[in-house]
Length: 127
Length: 160
Image (cartoon, rainbow over all chains, first blue to last red; front, side, top):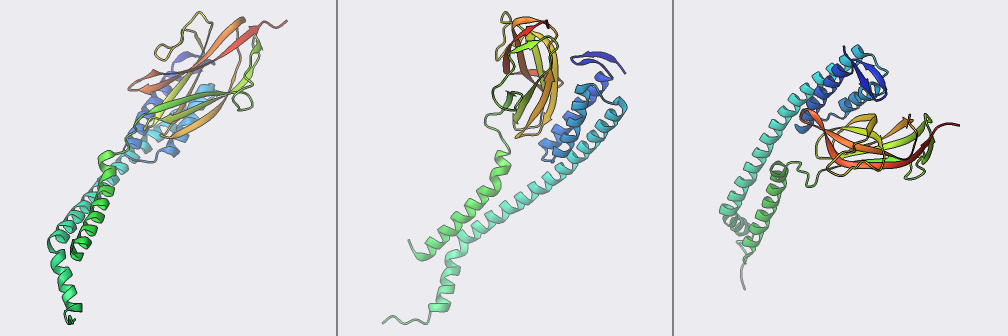
């Protein structure tokens, strides 16, 4: 615990909590960049930040809350990464199917079309 | 063009369009063309205007700070309120040289904004005092001046 000057007065534990806030921000940014929804955790962190800014906070409680946010953000980052991998795989499969369909249509569509045409109109007589 | 060729072309066009729609988000990602942040100052009625102009030393006044994040990523902002006079410069690249009287911090996800109520009082008298609000953004391991600032001109007098 360190005593440091703050604009609104002397605040206890500012340095350690400030470092933790920065660590939480880095973890949240990582989770967010991987597509995780971090809005709830950010709201939670902002409550701590505003309390710290006001100088009226319990350093231990704030530290525990931030620790919880960091853990959840890291979990969210991992889940989001797995979802991203799955999403990429599905996109890849989608594209392969589309390309395969394109080749099939390009190669065989006229044949299929005329076979169907002959089946239904082959008995027509031109007069 | 024969009928079968027309239908074949139409199917291929539809498939190509679908392929582009599926691949575009992966190729382009969530790229932001022109990332920017917003800083605004609202008066005590939460409107642009009615800003304090004449104050007594130690007299409290209320304002609202507006922050907006369009950086394409989560941003951790710090706003410094600095007090000085016209002799000190501030620009988009050089932060104001005045004394820091308050600082405010907030984290915003991309495309989010917030309006924060703030209460201040100034402890020193002076005419044409310049109260500058500067936006700094956390990058890497420290806060970096974002080049955005706004100011209030104040006459602060000692109580009679």
